[in-house]
Length: 430
Image (cartoon, rainbow, N blue to C red):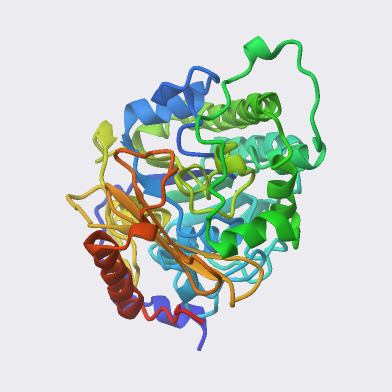
């Protein structure tokens, strides 16, 4: 069955006469507090801050999978990675599963895409969007051409309501930076560097699956954690300093696109969605890059601004799978009923959000369930497969309560088991 056939009348309803445009701005590997508007004085991000001031900041947003392609499959479908089948980098969204571009194009939107796709990298199989520019491996090479292409597209005054996705690479260049900074160095100007995190210590009783990722070196992400394990505190401080410079660089490119939007008179009728596909380890638990359920890799910035969106901070639990259903609601498009995300611009208060992860093979998978106060993690193999953290009193996740057992652990096990059953997730202990 062709995808288009699944996107007919039942998914599209009548919309108001002047429908809003949509500008989706994505960064890659930006942790939740790597922007100056949240009080982080170690960087300046005027473009991101301007979006946050105009709209709603969802400050409890998590990614559905802390690795690029699986998370992006959720961003564009509103489904969980185990449903999209994208459980590692490079897999495509399956034919027959409704996606953002298709839903909006069928509803009459002029849909365009620029930058990183990674579902797969080649853009093969991308439906619902016209590609205006592709990506490359490094943000330093890709992000400026992307902002220029998107700005030019906006200045051509696209016909009809539009949906433009600008998917930037940075601060993902930190991956390449890490590989260039093995070992320790002396840093005489370290007073200008951010402090090392307070939670650098590694729990010797981490789940065996996490320890495998730390030491096996089976891919570039695993190798990065191994490199970071040898860093001293000042090495971590330099890493944080240079990571923030990459965030500032991509903020500058985002600012160019926002300027074009304003100069063409389209800002007042455009909903802007800003997010990142996953976070970065930030040296907490001596972790670098992504592929971790720890807060630094799991949590991401998520802002929505524009007509019909109030300004302020929303502390409800949100996930990147909420982006498509929220956009559909703002556009007057009926979202497919099997989406796991919700409209976060309406009143809602969900009890938990979830995330998924795989270390090399399906025999070493994990699931995470986060409430407002606690985080529960379970792996399907290895010794010590569970983690439970009280995020209110232990935000750095330094004390694993799972070893104590008890009713709190049982309650979180029950929540996860029901979620697995409700979503058809076959995850289970090997």
